[in-house]
Image 1 (tube, rainbow, N blue to C red):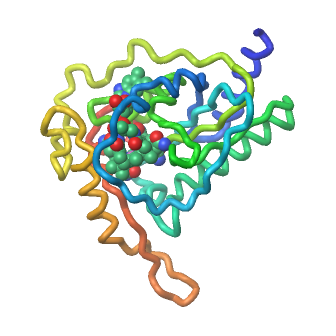
Image 2: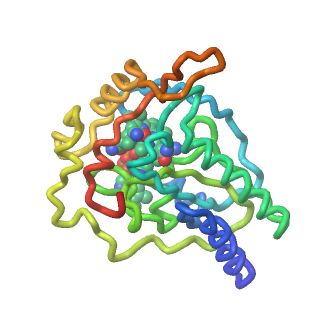
Length: 242
Ligand code: B12
């Protein structure tokens, strides 16, 4: 057990060597038993993501969960272009590097998981709560103690059972908060007192219809257009650094 505890510590430290990364570990069975797997999703979201599907490694029992700071002044991380966002691409690379590190230094196999649950990913907010990276706030987003909701999540499946990180206690940033996040929603997605997925989808579909000029040019000199997804419920949240 001591060996696994030490390995978990080293892995988290290795991940957090990277600026803007917080990491934790959650047990697969806890994540798969989380509220998102029980919730019935309403509204259809058509995704253009290009990440491929994966099959899980045998004996994959725990997840390294990563939260990457996504500050307001780095909008490019969320720009969707050619099948993914810059932030997702960056996190996929970090996940690959950590998987290789784990195998070469400790002989433990790891499998970086894709963004989509349907392609072999997991519900990442549940995973992040269970890995001690934050709590789910009134805006329905993971709130990290340092960066608030302005983080992007990712996970790496690991063989064996590393001990889970402790979920956070005494972190309750929404307590007594007047919830500017909810008032800021351009689609009033919280008007019934809880998050409405169909209303939120309406806004993101509108974003998709109106791509913005990224300021970059393609090989032929034409402007590269990107989708900038709405982040109002993130930006208005007073928790953490902007
Ligand atoms: C599909 C999807 C969407 C869809 C549908 C969203 C939805 N919530 O249904 C659309 C396109 C509308 C969308 C919108 C957005 N998304 Co989105 N989305 C996803 C995706 C792929 C799956 C989410 C999902 O379907 N959840 C299932 C539904 C049924 O549950 P839910 O509404 O999320 O609510 C559950 C949780 O809150 C959880 N929960 C609540 N309390 C607690 C307490 C505990 C203890 C636990 C364990 C769990 C838990 O239980 C709820 C269900 O009962 C995830 C990535 C992933 N693989 O997880 C990103 C993800 C959730 N999205 C993200 C973001 C940032 C956004 C947007 C801000 C848009 C943007 N700029 O990217 C908005 C914000 C919407 C909001 N306020 O919730 C981030 C969230 C980061 C964070 N800090 O939390 C994620 C993790 C992706 C990422 N790149 O990191 N998204």
